[in-house]
Image (cartoon, rainbow, N blue to C red; front, top):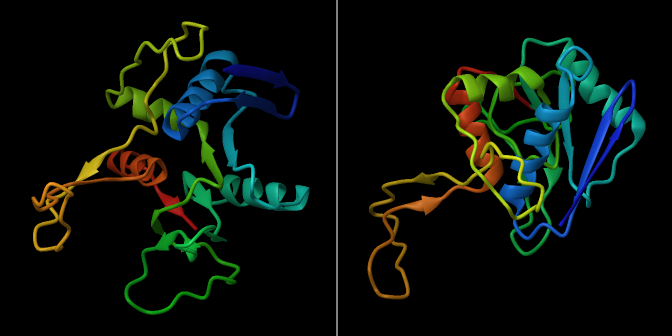
Length: 194
C-alpha cells in the first residue's frame, strides 16, 4: 500500500495505490485529509474516481456550486459501467422522471462518489456524532482511520424473493460504500444535492 500526499495553497491531493477495498480506501483518504490539513485552508473534499472523464471547469463548477448553495454535499449524475449500466444518483423528487441536464440542484438521498464534493465540516460532524477511529495496519503507517465509508446493512427485505445459496431467504443486504456514507451524512442532519 502506498499513501502519497501533495499539498498546495489551493488544494491537497492525496493518492492511494494498491488498496484492496474501496471502503477502506475512501475512509483512509478522508482520515488523512482531516489529519494533515487545516480546515481554514481546505474546506472541501472532492472525490473523483479514476474512470471518470472530467475537465478542470467541471471541478471548478462543482466546487463553486457547493460553496454557493445550502447543500453540504453535491454530486453529479454519471453513467455506471458494466452489465448493470444505468445512471448513478437518486434525486428525491417523487415518481416523475428527472431532467438530468437541468441547471438547478435538487435534493438527493443517494449519490455515487465518483464525482462528488463534500464540505469538510460534514466529516467533523460525523466524528462529533460519535464515529470512532479504528486501528488499521493495512497501510503500515499506524494512523487510525475513521470508518466513514464502511458498509451498512439494511433490511429486513422480507418478501423480496431473494434466496441465499443455502436455500434460506435473505433478510438483510449490504449497502455499497457510497450509499452507506450518504445514509450517515443524512442521519447527522446534513443536506445532499445532485
